[in-house]
Length: 230
Image (cartoon, rainbow, N blue to C red; front, side, top):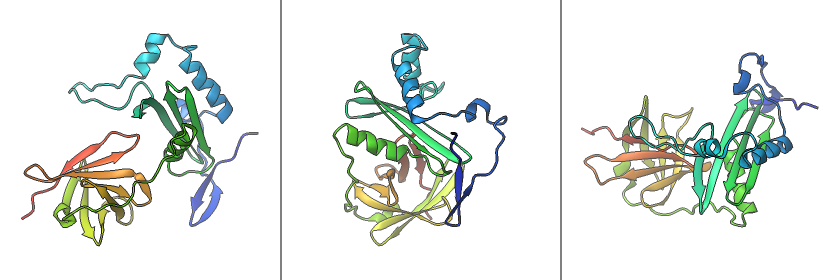
């Protein structure tokens, strides 16, 4: 009863490209379902596989050698929502994507699987968790950010360069994907992506040059400094 995997191409769903499971091995050559994943997570939370100390280490944010703190433990991403610790991880391979999200100490687990190649369903899992907790997620409303044109310019994000442009009441972020990403203002020099409000950029104008921080709910923020304008 194994499910078939698909991919979307030009608006149609096709069988996913073949991939020998001898290649991904433990990085994806696993078959499961939401019921078994629930049992697996329940066993992890009850220390049935590891000692309590090992489980605690797995859920402790790792610190890099240069002192940089991360939001990653041993094989899981770590975050928070209110007073809850969020322990989560995504997975994907040809034809399949999934996401598991656990909230502690409420002992809640949300697992979302999708038999189609595409973006991680992490946002859907998070919204479902909010519903279960009785705190429905609300999309941040559009606000006003003054002098958005002062944020325009070229920014270097690691090895990737991007350009910020003010257009009407939005910012356009060029350099990722085929076209610009549209961000709407939500206040305090922070903007949310129109099609994915969990993807945000925040600007800091206090220094000699403007900085931009790219943030995603379940990923580490990345900060870039604008190139000097002549």
